[in-house]
Image (cartoon, rainbow, N blue to C red; front, side, top):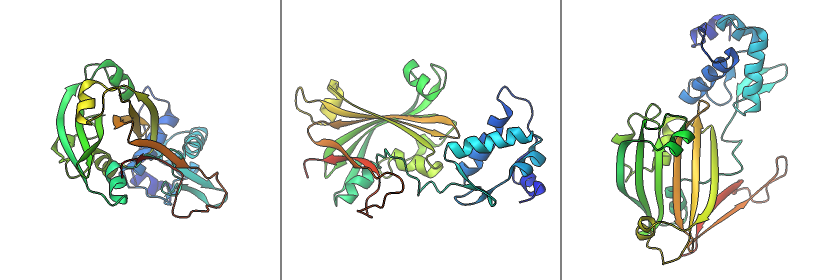
Length: 270
């Protein structure tokens, strides 16, 4: 790709902003990857091409590409060029699958009951996690997932409006919020925290849990274009689920080719 071609593909001369110029350049490239304009294994403009098309220094272009490489967005091949990483091949060690897919893999039926779907002012703790101001409005969905009509997960999810402005128009009885968000943009970064806690009365009632039974809570925050766009709390009955997984270090042959490095929730009652 020539410098002229890079210019035509959206790398315009950047105006001054509070962000460092290398960060601006990184976000431009990440945006093209997120939108599908640059696909896995596509060639990314070289340092020389970025210097010519954006007006940044060679040092700035080098830093942007180096950090994108370190963060896993691109791969640099000596003497060949820089290419968009194949994110499907480089999966995260910790992966919690879409609950509907998990249920279908067990040969069972999934359905969901939506309780709340609205835009609402966000509380300070959630605002901090999504990097928005306290009181800002965000999209919110609260629903129950069922496996063969048994409630197995309560999903309490917040999504920034500018990332998913048609969120409230979706039918989450037919497609899970996780699947819908994956269609908007590919997952670039995820953070999971797992803890056991005693649920409140509402969660206990929705999941039909016994008195004094703890629940397993997975909190999940996801990033696109280097910013958090979604935060979810996923509640599961503690007596019916466990967290399990298999790890294979890089470069070691997989003795079970059908398996990957995953951590998943397993239903005890099947």
